[in-house]
Image 1 (cartoon, helix red, strand yellow):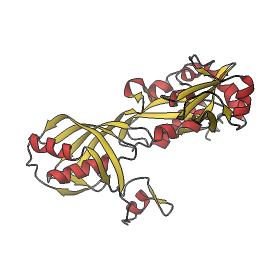
Image 2 (image 1 turned 135 degrees about the vertical axis):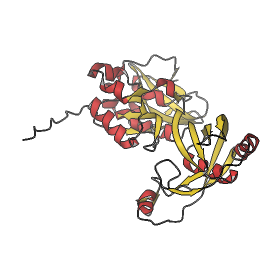
Image 3 (image 1 turned 180 degrees about the horizontal axis):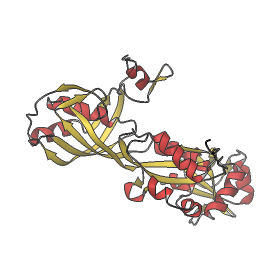
Image 4 (image 1 turned 180 degrees about the vertical axis):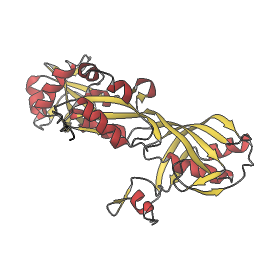
Length: 326
């Protein structure tokens, strides 16, 4: 007889953990494993990585989930290896080979094509993606053998760096570093580069090395997290304000902090600012975000008083030099 499964006692957890998503897991599978290890009530991730991709996956807990959109919108940087001469049904190594051509290109031609794909470009989202059409993910249509019309999207490739190249070996390939805007499909970019070279291509490897201000040097592997005790895991969490770099900072006294948390606008001698991180001063703690127009602080995403209290209990007061309310 199988032993009964132990029910995990969930708890409020607040903050951000930078996970090195392992090969073979979907982003949601990785998220659920981390959520289980921390026994967290609420969690989400910022930006999906395919099962064959690895790298920086910020996992947000509790209060931090309210600001996860900040990193969905952030620029990303990837390292990828394109296998030249072979096209696959999915654009990566998981798919079936659908075309094979000889590779007869020079390094100069590769560099010219990379230059052509740098800057604003238009992409057609791949069928094997989680983008939805009429309520269904595109990959569901693809698995059923149905191809649907997709709306082209404008993205920006800020930089394409050629790291390594092998055009004459048994597995012709180029290794690239791609710095791009949100919404860029690297598989589609790889396929388009292959077609521009006249030989076709698919992604052999893909690793996200940066999202916004978060870099691969900061990530924690799932194996390392599994080897820790509970206290060590909790110490790996960054506070929610880690998601708000570059925000103009306003600190409110207790009376104004309470009014702000209830959704009321506050007035002060602040400059106009589109992105504002708002703190209370006793204890110094993140209250939420907003924006300032003509000296008026307008609430945006707000934490609840309970989330503020729990965050201070977990991470301690914020140590920061902030502006004060007038």
